[in-house]
Amino acid sequence: MLAPAIRLADAGFTVDSLLAKSLADYARPFRLAAELGLGRTVHAGEGRPPSEIRTAIEVLGAQRIGHGTTLLDDPAVVELVLGRGVAIEACVTSNLHTGAIA
Image (cartoon, rainbow, N blue to C red):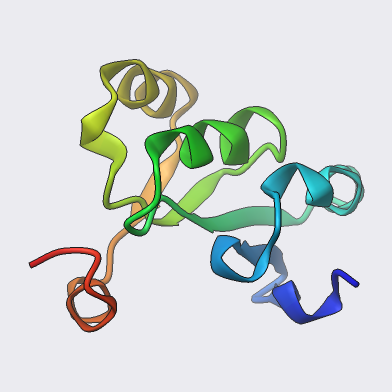
């Protein structure tokens, strides 16, 4: 069931990768959100591989990445983020509490 990991927020659509088995499982609802003109945020790469950020952008069409602490580990993903103009929302306090950064 996808409902626990998905919520509408501020006229946008977001999913938390920590609650998802695979971000690709959310492709259909994210396509619908895009068709409805909703913004799309994915919490990805918080202590998880940068490939998760790539999936969020390429498969889900994320316009904003929440956390993204592992982004700099993969120069190709950095280029993808820059090339598509994807915003990174960083919350240092949260990342410290979860242990994603030290």
